[in-house]
Image (tube, rainbow, N blue to C red; front, side):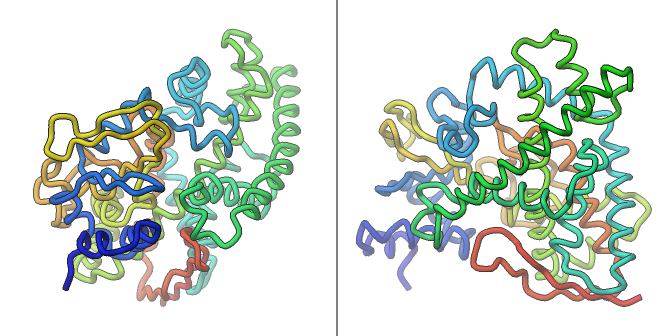
Length: 414
């Protein structure tokens, strides 16, 4: 049988990206292994792929050369669509302060209780996506972050269309998306609805602050900070924008990660048995290594996309040194990088003791996920609660012909 690269080279240039994209999502690990060995930088007209750890690290840490410009049409002036700017520096720092690291143990306890309650109320049958993996982060946003008097179904739409447009509706996705314009239209529609709710929420919290009500959640703390005037250019419209980011960043990515972990575990019964034993033990953190390692095998995002801002040499000094032209879309194929033997020992083995070093589960560099600390407990805790269910049986995950888990039928006994 021909190798991946032999098939790639024999395919007309205009059809190569479709071929490669199929391998990325359907046959990733053997394809990536061949790329790392024989063509670590794969050039196509639509984009360029980097498969090795060092090159992916270079792309994600060199924001001066590889920018987040592709996010700007989706997110406008929001700081996550910027690189090394004053706005990014200031507002990311504010949001990191708001998401207190000290709260993480209490958040894990809350997630455990919420997930257990949802599963108990389901009486042995649930759509795990809307009933658990989306429901828990949505409730966290309401009850912990401060989205009071919000409609859960509306919040789910706000999060869904914003994430779908930003991450799965880029120009290089267009040939594989039935109606890219409809996704943009839906994102704009829900953005208007979300904006109206957030302006009302922040206005009410500002009135509370003026009346002397102490801040108790992320929204009220942001309002309190803004009212001091101590942070430059951080008025109430900035509060609204950043409160919106709390929801958009919390729901779909978390759901996708939890689904991927549990789906992978259920397909590997030997590992599943050990993970279930860890979940049933007294130490809540015993499951963490299993969840993180499963996520390395099936990350929610196999790559991070960047735009080359000037003619640049990637893989400098190596046999695969390649000049990347200004304007090129570059995919840092971090799924591949997390299996690079130059960065991780025995990468093909499932090792729940591996630890977080040299991994990209929450990104890397300037755009590393600000919710990393919360996600690192919320994801494994939902996995833990699911694995505690007796006699759990799962159907196939339903993606509804897209890239995001949409539904997943579970049943259990007891």
